[in-house]
Length: 316
Image (cartoon, rainbow, N blue to C red; front, side):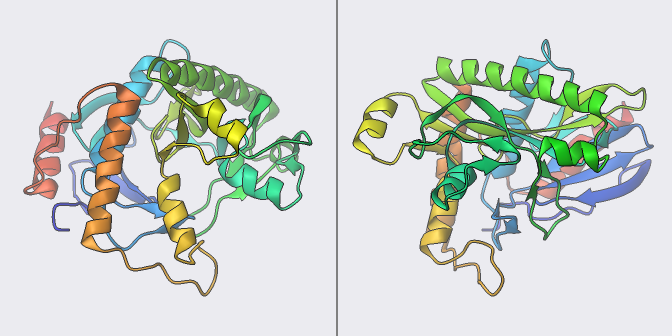
């Protein structure tokens, strides 16, 4: 698929460094600003798939920037501008080395652990007698350590985070408070669209003046799992799978094709038809999550478009 952006190697004025994550490339400008480019790479089980998904970067970037705007009254964030559909610009931050995962329902990783007989996740007890996709009595925070590209994020408990000095107790209390506030707002937004925000993750950083802010993405289908609210309880009562809006459909396809990112496993072949179907699902996700029609950006030359827009922004 030629109309995707898989990698970037821009040289912007004042550029100090370039960090490449699983999906995003982050350019440090003069140790003041970060230019974050959302590529069309698809990551699942902490492995980057060999082909890009058309419009995925634009979709993730635009959902994240809309959700930042919708939560900035609750929690400060890093964002200052969006000069291109695939680009977000914001304050330089020192990221915390943990992802704050919060789960309202026992799904995905939590359900897989539960099925394996575990009743403790990241130091948090999961009640007996739950079925997959049941709601927890109250949402639980199950942090993960941030992995480098190619490594797996690891579950970690609050106690271990504090004992290892990964985050100070004073800062961690703020992270927990912000995580719960964002999840409640995200759940309210989802409910207004006929969706259930099942679980999600937030990342935070510290600005130069020591302020804790939300960074990276928020409430996107890559960082979050959504169910359709309509028919949720009926499906639970019948023991049926839930209708999902998330990247889980890709994970399930990979599992069905004998891939879970484990050693010795090979990523299954993704045909152009399958790639196109994933792109269409991401557009469906966008429209359901935002309640707006998705407007495709010009992808005739994405690299040139991004470079032109970012350079025009930086000249200002």
